[in-house]
Image 1 (spheres, rainbow over the protein chains, first blue to last red):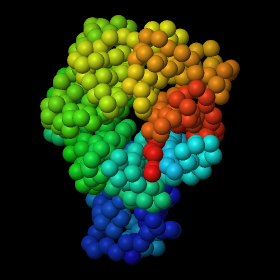
Image 2: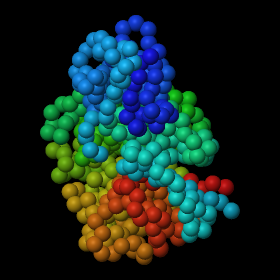
Image 3: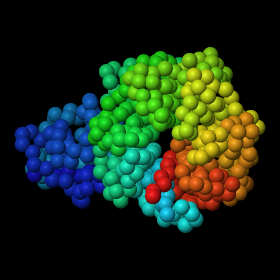
Length: 98
Length: 371
């Protein structure tokens, strides 16, 4: 069971409270997490990564286990703590005021 | 008795203001989608409780929301706005070429007859159409072939902000783009031609009468006379009596002919409204006086409407989509400001009163009459 923390506005959009839990098969990567997330919550498509290019939106960052994974390959394996559900995968809105 | 519903889009959410036909007491609902930029909300004329809304932020991009119960509940629709093919480049502020990039939806125009059909004007400028209630969107890409490489962004971006569907001819569509100009299609959006003859932009363009590149801010039409168009250009109030084929200036005695919105009275096709703004960099009313100007002669002769509006120390702006008219017998006029006020007049502009005073900056105002 993978646990994902979404920004508040995306939790509202997806109509979830607290962490999102996802079942994944195969390698646990940013891409596989986001694929599963968007399959379960299709309204999130286009809000985290671009529809066409699948690139991370520029004001979105990905954190895990105290590290910034935003610029890592989307196919790089995430830490075992994320894969095992011990630690969450964090989708974060960039610190940009507002 | 009819009810009135005003749809207000702001920098931090949407609000709905409702009243009866007296328009004296108002209920305020909102913020809906708090924290999001709500560029535009508009109801379907064919099914008034169907509302479409454009919701966006820099973090999470563009969403389209739809309500089928007058705004009580909303469902996210499709948000994939893919340009057809390679959109290429357009002109940047400094005259160099710049890649076309989708940023947001500025304007939504539902079909007058089919609640499933809705048009979206987007930045970077393009027109999209949905035939399934907003679930999927297809670009009407013929528009960009009208010298799209010469279009350029205005201060707000390169946005398609005005869509007018001709009520007498379902194949005729007008759009306006900052800064590209006005365009017309006579075949349902497949092919387009610029309709900018007569516009003069001597301080903005090297060729002041160029075919494209003019910073058109807003266009309005009265449904009984679809050949007559009124335009608020960057500077200049313009009028066309031949569906945009030619334009002439009707700024007349206005204190400034810079501004953003323009509207036509619901029952008097020669009565039009603008809100003069001091200049292209001083985006506030001249002399700190918030005045709507009304012409009952289709332009040239204007009178200031001031009763109930602040006449000192007022330095707000009124954005291009932030003025609307209702269709009640005594025509109502509404506008919202960047200072968060929404003003209403139930007597064609003679007197005004604020419905609300302290919203986030208002980006758009639309009004529905519900029987």
